[in-house]
Image (cartoon, rainbow, N blue to C red):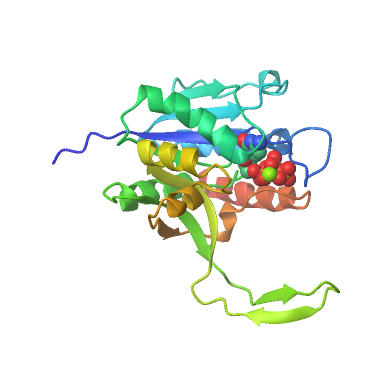
Amino acid sequence: MTDTVSFHALVPAAGTGSRMGGDMPKQYLSLLGRPVIAHTLDALLRVPRLASVCVVLSPGDTWWERYAWPDDRRLRVLRSGGATRAASVAQGLAVLAGETSAKDWVLVHDAARACLAPEQVDHMLDELREDPIGGLLAMPLADTLKRADAAGRVDATLPRAGLWQAQTPQMFRIGLLADALRAYPDVTDEAGAIEAAGHAPRLIESGGANFKITYPQDLALAASILASRKEPRE
Ligand code: CTP
Ligand code: MG
């Protein structure tokens, strides 16, 4: 069977970055002299198989137009972000669903995961393109897990066997994901909606470099990861 499906990236970027603090949303904070999200978009645009990269901003975003963005016709911007990440994703999906086939793939990727490597996306496309459900990048848990009691003391040590930390991209068929998010809007990631709909997403092993920039100290780590990748090329 000829496979003519296309792949699209959807980047929710309508958050405020409350855990980061500061006076601008974290996706615009400076990372090696450019906004965080510029690195994220670079990584996605360096994957030739992605037919489009759609960014979902908050309707009140006044930051986007202050910067220069890659001159790539695959890049597009929507200003219809919602109150939650899932709502922002649903808004982007609604637009994509109107322009693509339900069988086409969407890769939802957090704007705040700026250290994604294009090779990881390529690997994911290779692994999942024939999959009936789709899946996500994730990392096996390395540390021992403790549950705290109200006094901040260890109540229990939990078995970590089989536990993974979910990352993004999360890659699903556009039709399947749109239906699942409509039925289960209160999830914290796309895989959660797919699971609630009765399917089992595949886990594609990733590494710690694809972490989500969340707290102020994360910026220095992201800078060192990105800078170390540039060295051999230049
Ligand atoms: N996001 C979004 N719309 C929202 C909330 C979040 O598009 N209403 C996006 C963020 O911009 C980010 C991604 O979802 O790229 C992951 O969310 P998170 O890391 O939690 O970002 P924030 O919600 O901005 O940060 P915080 O939770 O610390 O406020
Ligand atoms: Mg958040």
